Image (cartoon, rainbow, N blue to C red; front, side, top):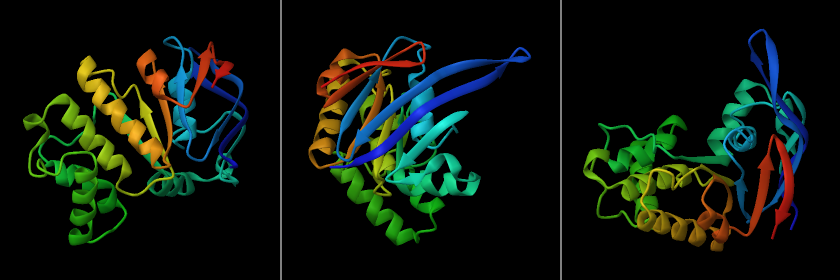
Length: 226
């Protein structure tokens, strides 16, 4: 099984106070198709910056990034947008749901942006909500859902376009322990189905579920743990 994600000597610098601050210092990271990788490290270590580069939300300042052989670091803004829309699914700590939309309409949003027709959007979103255990909550708005249910809607939304990679940034950070375990169980199921997952976390329970842990500290990758 080849590498789906390959970062080589990636640096990331941001302007700061008239100068630059370097967040990532020449990191190498490879992820195989179907792996569940947890990125761990203290706050400010560069985990989220690394995830943003993998998700084509940010460009490397230096170095290369290939996704299944495609040189992502060379794509223009439109190319990056297309890649995000077709190959990446994102799950965030704060859910980022539209408060006035039902679970069904929230989950269908990526399909709306992709130009799918209404009946197709709703059918695909309903199937994905059923997949994450929310088939009975399609018409509920976020305020009518628990934290765990809201995160399940976010996962359904991330998966509705059948992306190559599911990316999550502290997906259990706003959930109690029991609800967090439910989301982790869902991630495990997705991994068993062959999904590729890259998850940023402080939570050692997340790391225990992953197939591999990559430690990031001060913008550098330490030893990977199988």
